[in-house]
Image (spheres, rainbow, N blue to C red):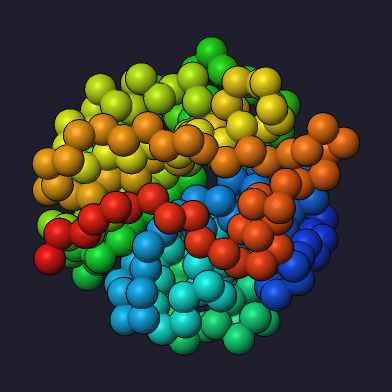
Length: 253
């Protein structure tokens, strides 16, 4: 299925992290939002860390990580050449072109130069199965539906993660069981994101410390909204102030 070329779709500017970054995104099709900011906040990168993002879109998550962790080097991949071009433009316009680079490529067949391991790998993958929520827009559908390949996304990320490093992903909560059946038994932490008090989690962030033997950790989670619809103080700290989501209790050396 051909993707809608970004150049033919009207774009608009959006701000993230309290306006610390401004990005151009297509007005039609898939648009990055809360999921991208949350998964980036969970990556425990440090100054000098080598980081890989699989399925980078227009670059929002990678740029959020670069704002929070100065000095990390991020490579991002996406199959959509139009989005990759837009992502590199966004990196340049935010003064991050030297720290964040985006490439066109299949996450399941990375170029030989990047078939190496990274300190941290993260992804906001397509997480609607073939019978999940669809979209009349081809670009949005392609970005959201995994066509039964969720396991391949997770395995691709783990392959590129160095021993002792972390692989982090955000998924629809009802796919947690499927993901845990694929991921290693040790070193896994799960952080639920609760939309409001009393409601089921809509998303989960999963982080794996590669090679760790610690048992599965189900964390207390993050409540996103107050009863009046405003973000909670904790969610606002992540979304507007670039505060991290601390998940990894240990990191192998």
